[in-house]
Image 1: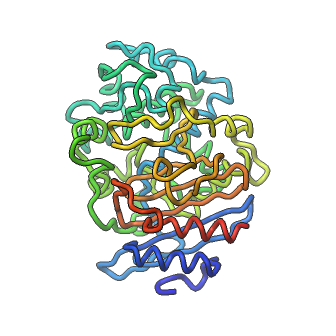
Image 2 (image 1 turned 120 degrees about the horizontal axis):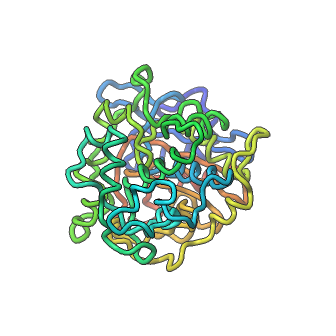
Length: 386
């Protein structure tokens, strides 16, 4: 298998699937999977940096963009389980300034379900502002909603991270920065030590180089709605700036390895518990598999109909409303990221998977499922697990 590590835990079906992904255009990929608490796949292929010829290895770091949202959603549920917030309460109950300009009725659940009516960013939000937590939260608190809460799907590509992150910060008795909170309460406990929301300078040499252009999931008619939610910075723009790699961007800024992030998904797949430590309740995670109302509603920001659950995770289901790699099982929690990164947890089978890669691609309009570069990977891992 070209450019695959000699030390990879890579069963033959997965090796063939990775080779197929390269045939379909992938450059460098890592994939890790757990069945229960057993690591069953830990594999990689290709180049981390084609210009220098540096290959991907187990320690290569990748940005995962919106897959980050799963960590932020989990942090919200963690605070809810501790009795520190109510998902049906208004955001303004915990962050009074957020209730200004007609936003007083926006509930935390509206944000989780991408029906808050505030998908947009403050006008002129640039790299400098996005790297400044206080400027972003102040700017978001001053916005006027585009729609009433709870009535229209408008994907909060970047805004939901700062809003939910600020709620978590304000309900944390230690008032930790959100990046520190998830490191202490999620990444550390599950053993995801190579996952960061705010990458240290010392880890920079491990970064993969992004390949390709990616300006968001839509084009043409949906561009104005997309622009208001994504701002002027594309996914590669965000990743190319050291200040933003070092900042906490809780909707789109995590940098990780597949092996590290897979530990988080394994915790979810095992009903909220890993290595004897309970993080979230089994009942809460099962409730998260319920689809939000009107689940196939068209979202004008994404330019598609995303399959999202009531708890904030994306769900498994029929392609293309759901992602190709996790398959169509009904109790899958997942979260895709810009350009194709994805993690998922199957609560029925206890299978968890993380795919990181550096070739950005848009699947809009959706390509045939057999031509999606990650379909074969998902199928192969399920075959190995079975």
